[in-house]
Length: 237
Ligand code: TMP
Ligand code: ASP
Image (cartoon, rainbow, N blue to C red; front, top):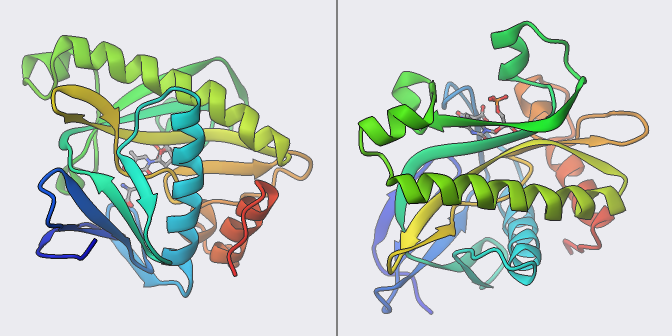
């Protein structure tokens, strides 16, 4: 499958049309961004590592019965995906407090959230991705009520599958963000699942192995992503 026109270029990925109107090619670039695009750097190998990482996770989710846009890995930095009508809302589940919830609610990083908590954010960098609730989504028509329910259901289902998967590699899934879209009327998981959009801590040392290494200038960003991948059985050579 060949790339045709660039449809959209985000902070870390670009998507291209193909000869099939229902399929797109997603290119994982080396660009790494944080703080709504205020901090951007190129990190060697990151596109390749994230592309392979994402394909592995999406395949595991599909196998667990969660519909995703992922079709197949094409090469080091590209994957073939279904073309979705994206819903501009981000779904976040948190198993452990970290990041914005600590700042917003004044809670200590590292406390267990039992049950895990769920938050919606509006996908809008200019507004700094504000937190929103279900009423906002319905009042402004950002998604249908049934799709709101389905996004919550699938996001929690992903939690069950991935918490267990990462645990096998001695890694805690602290939190993560998912984006959904519609494909021929069906709500399915889109975007990506990589260490760019979740928090992953070593179970013993609680060392951060995700994009917080970039946000907090901790170094070894891509090396940590690779370490997680290797613990899941992936090879990046
Ligand atoms: P937060 O702590 O910044 O609210 O983020 C929670 C999790 O969701 C964290 O793993 C990062 C991810 N996330 C993104 O990747 N992009 C986003 O725009 C948002 C709001 C969260
Ligand atoms: N949406 C945020 C960003 O701009 C998430 C993050 O800080 O990674 O990149």
